[in-house]
Image (cartoon, rainbow, N blue to C red; front, top):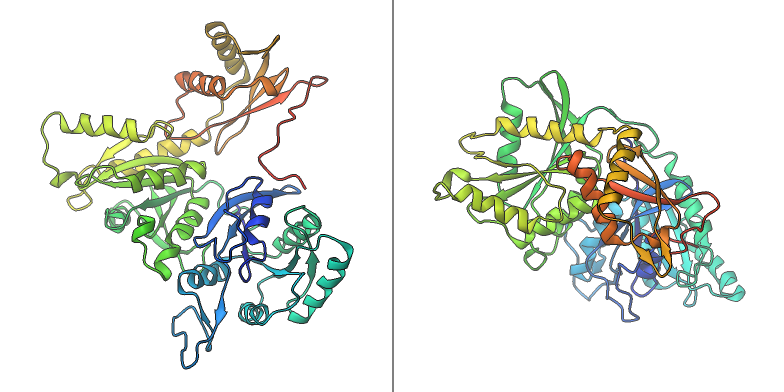
Length: 468
């Protein structure tokens, strides 16, 4: 399974990083404002261009200053350059972990001292593709001004207007071209191996569970270098099949995260999820389900990964004959956005029910590769439409003509319809429920796609991905 490249947008404040990010991902995810420093926390989303899929991460602007007599001594910085502390570590780690870096500069201002200092930082990352995007080049004169930024010594410069989309296509062509020489991008990596990411809040028992899974007598352990630069995954053999366990840092609530390396746990966890198939979401049974548990579950859902919920520390929970059922009811209510995940109550301390973890993860993984015959799907579709007729819009009624499964990992179902504009999200949810009623796809997300029949109206809705 080839990994997705990571592209980081960096630069000084107010050069248009968030505007470019929103254009690349096709929606307003990043807050844009002319006031410098609006973007503080990094956000990440997926982008597609000419068939290549990659992740883009937005960063806060790097403020470069050096108060007299002071010096930055953090491990992420070198030399005597100082930054705004809350934003510096975010951008610095994004640079370190990215496969390609886009440095945004302002074509209306020319090269500033801050640009030169940031370029100096980027030059320390030898061998990493760096692309300069001279933003706000809204006319021919400003496009000519962009040539000045070759003076930064970082290589090719692309004049763009993030707000209008001018030149962004050429910029993306250069980004995609840079992927071809990256390790792990273009070749498949152990396509048949089960990859499990262990995620959750701090101190819920992730490392204890990992150690138990590794220490079982049936497994053979070997080290395997992870995709990220400082992660080591663990590869084991379970019942004769290879399994890769991916440990992650605990994710705190945003208000509890300290400045520094800890602030990057979300990005690293997202990268771990990206290269996994199944996520084990650990919940502290003694604490109950927290808002942060739900936030982490949202990350899993957004990554379209299968999920198993693991309630740990069940040995210290005071309980009676109703406790487990009450906890299950709470799970179903608070995780109703997840695809019916299996739930296991364990104790990583005593080993209670830990033997069920890999068995369940393997079963859920198999659901990601389940294929349904087209004849079965169309029988199901006819029954669903008879039970609940398709919606109308004005004088037009949605006609569902044909259904087929077009992909696995995760499963994707393609509906051929007369007009995609007539597909309401509530009916889409109904169709998914009808599929799951016969084919549960336990703990596994499924995607529904709708395509107009040849000769019928095309969907004129604005696509989620960008149009340049």
